[in-house]
Length: 341
Image 1: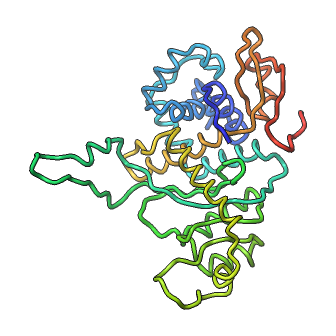
Image 2: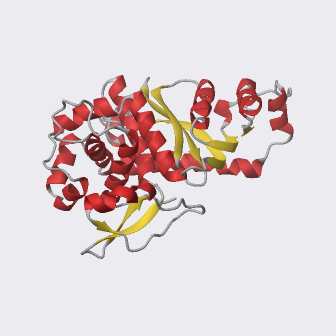
Image 3: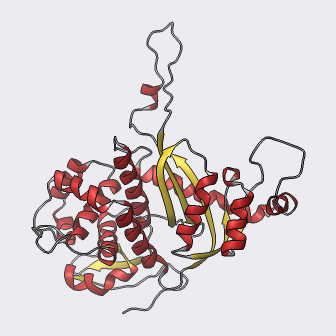
């Protein structure tokens, strides 16, 4: 699944998702200079452009058409965006936004055939590899910087669409096997799937029992966790993995590696936050931006411009009137599109 390269398309998708998940204002007596939807779209653009708060403000100043798309009466100050990130990217708000993107993508039929789970670590600094591994003098050996703690992101994704269904943010190194059940329960609260693929880091008889007997999800996990041994694996389902491992289905697990690669390539392999909570907010924004860039696409055109850009599927209901758009051609990139409202 490809991602959108258009900032207008991503901004519109962010507006639609925010309108489904968040109220326009946090309080009835708020200044009402900017809606939460507009501020969230600006935060998504920050990650889309791989810049900081000051950078996204400068980009908006140079793009009057984007200001018109976002319906901004003025450009928010960079401190306004920083405070909005602390408010909009909390755990509960981020989950609501993720729910909105999944509703936009899958509609009412929230059932997929196969999912995959994996985790990755990100850099806490944007220093180059040469700076990390450098020489102090010609005679001395290479110096290496070893990070004992790093931001860690775990995701469950759909192997067909590369859409993130659930995530967990935190710090590593930490055991992956303990993250399996919370991630699976979080994903099943949004969609249903028949098969879940995972690498040997999630191998555990308790995880197999939780998925298969508790939720009816067929798990395919190599039984390789622990010390190498010639003895049969412990547990019924781990022994089943040894004798009847489905290698052809397990080959699709590489798609979750593709998802992690997409996040790092498009939005950077490092987080800008310094504290633990700011790093968690950065990880959540990366997941949300990734989903918004691969939402179901509709071909939309400006009234006076023939240059196409994309808009999320459900956003057509009010954005036509609000933003002055004229829909010429609707091209769904899904096998089962929802009907127009």
